[in-house]
Image (tube, rainbow, N blue to C red):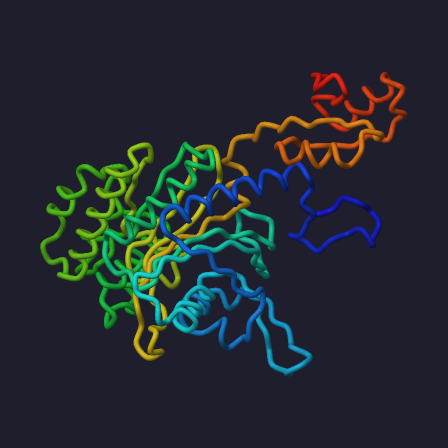
Length: 392
C-alpha cells in the first residue's frame, strides 16, 4: 500500500497507504454486512475515540498487552501523554465498566474503527488497520464463548466468506500444567521451548513430571473434535483438576460450535498461546482457505468490574478487515446510469431515489456518439433518455 511515486511530497510512511475507490466499496460492503449481522445477534454499536490518555488506554488488561506497539503523543492542551489506540478491546472494556456500568450483564456490544500500530505483524504489512468486533461483557460460561464464536462465523458467512475454520486453544493451559512455582526451572523452560516450536519428541525427552502429558497434548490430532473426549481420558492421570477442567471446557465449546455452524471446520490445538497475551480462558483463531494468517481472534478475558475493584469476565472477538478483503469474493458492480447534462438535477434526484447509481455527462447532449463514448469511459452500463433506459 506504499506509494511508488518518486516525489518525496507524494511518499507515505511505511505501512500506510491510500484506499482507492474499487477497494473502498468492497471494504464498506464487508463492514456493513458484519455490523448488520452483529446487530441481529443483539449487539449495540459503540464508537470510542481514536486517542485516549495513555494511563487509561494502556491500563492492566487488554490495553497493556499492546503497550509496546502503541504510538504516544502529548496533548498540547493538558500536557498529558496520549496513546493512539492499537486495539479497541480495551476501550470497549472501559466503556462497559464506566458509561455502561448500570446496564445488565452480559452486555452485548459491537464496534468498528481504525487502529494504528508501530510494527506490523509478520503477515500484514499495514500499520493502519480496521478492526470489527463484538464483546459480551460479564459473560463467563462456555455457552457465552460459543455465542460469540458462532456470531462471528455467521457474520463472516453473511459477508460472503464461506470457506472457514476455527482453531481452539487454551492459552493458560501450559502455565497451569507447569504450575507457577515450577515455571522458571530449567526443565520447565525446556518444555516451554518445545511447545513453542511444537516439537513433541523434544517435550517427551525432558526430565520433568509433566513431560509425557505435554507430549501427548502436542501429538493430539488437530481435527479430532469428535474424538477429543477419548483423547483426554487417555491422558496422564496426574493432570491437575484445573487443567482437566480446561480441557473439558475446550471439548464442550468445540461441540457447541460444530453443532451450530456445521459449515465450519473446527480444530483443537490445546497448547497454542501465541498472540493470546491477555486471554484467561479458551481462545480461538478464525481462518479461511487460501488466506495466510488469521481473519480474526477471540476468547475470554478479564476487564474492570462496574465497581472498579474486582474484575468481570468477558468474551469477545476481533476481525481484521485487511484479511477479510483477501477472503471475500469480488463484489458485483452495481448498474450505473448515464444522464446527459441537459436532463436536469431533478431527474438525477428522482432516479437516485429509485435506487439507481447516477453519473452526469459533460458531452454535448445532442451528440449521441460522444455521449455514448463518455458513458463507457465513466463505466456506465445504461443510458437514460426520454425514451427510457437503454443498455450500453
